[in-house]
Length: 229
Image (cartoon, helix red, strand yellow):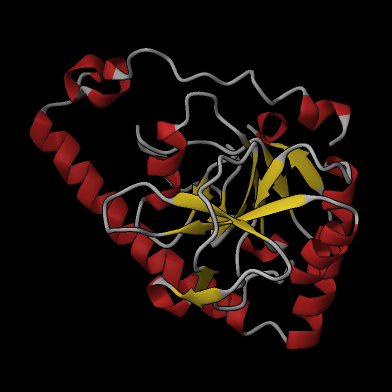
């Protein structure tokens, strides 16, 4: 990992209390106002999610492949080929950038990878180590996950983007797994959002539970999230 990204590891312990963010009264909203706002945001996100996924699937396969190669090149600038940190990646789904060739090249350099596993709705993800000979099985949404590897704790999490905004927040699939998982870490990992330029939107209307990324990597750039806020 390069100096910028490496310095992020170990510097993001969760604050002791988020009550100033979780309590609507703290920011002058009534509970009913807050619930209505949450419903409005959820409806908007659902429609925007569907629009962005449709746009992503409409990208020609050859274009998506070239974009994934460019994203992998940007990741090489951020992450050293080093056997130290465990890197959580993802199995591509619904037109997401396919980073499996990058993972394969990383294995050959001795890098360590993991895949996220959904255990239950409403629960944080766990991570299982992913090796070249790992037996995979179908998990939630038929996405392959390691069948019998040990649970690990990644220091770097590469998360696919349905959308992302100018404040460095990620729009995912709506299950809340990403934010719920990051909240459970004693020390926040370096979080790298990987997606296409076309996934950029002005805002996701971040709520108190949304967790910003550390970096956003697309086919044209790798930008530290703080720089785009």
